[in-house]
Image (cartoon, rainbow, N blue to C red; front, top):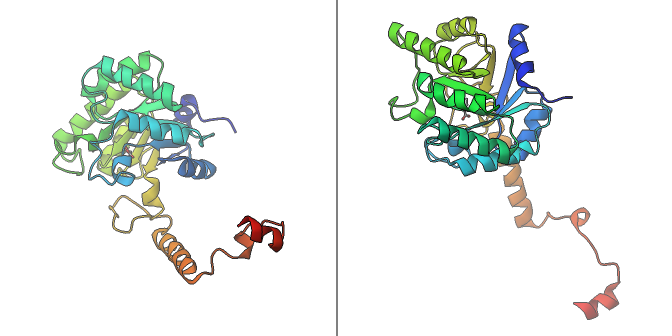
Length: 278
Ligand code: KIV
């Protein structure tokens, strides 16, 4: 199977085929989600929370995104692979954004970059796209602005906020982004944006009217029972089976039933020789 290209993804919108996107932060998860047939894999800066245990994404560095991008890129063969530009790697100037995107693409092996923000990020998006690097936009709840937004909350509610969000999404499209993530926006607004934009919309907490959906892999797999926001559906509950499996291992080690004979290697030289060797 050939890797999904920007053109493939855009023609999915044209032919009303929904796009399935999921995050991955390492080669193992990259291999698994690719085998499951997702269209896009996102090396999201949500790794700052999911992998690093932070309370938000702000501390993630460009080097860390490149490292995780490279890990995932080694395993993903079919899906289009995009990687987040982290906080403060693109906000200062279009030149800074271009430098960050260039490093990510050269050093990670991913095919596109994602960055947050609407009209204010348009010059950065344009500079990156003009250099030949595809860009995924991201509006609505933009987690890198968590403090400015007073928390992880729904965006675009009410007439003025909705109008601003539409302007932002149009600016991202105008700047050359090839698709756009809509995070935590009312379903009606996301459906309206999906109708207005010619680029695909990928929703998370944005209802069923988007051209595609994205979820954090750990959330859809149910790896953390403490985290269950309204917009997540767990397609499996893997936390308990993992804890149970590791508990069984702990018991087996303690009682001496692991390793068994079948897991062991032997020196076939015979007891007389070995008594002299050891
Ligand atoms: O970082 C991330 O995982 C994201 C998705 C949740 C859209 O930006």
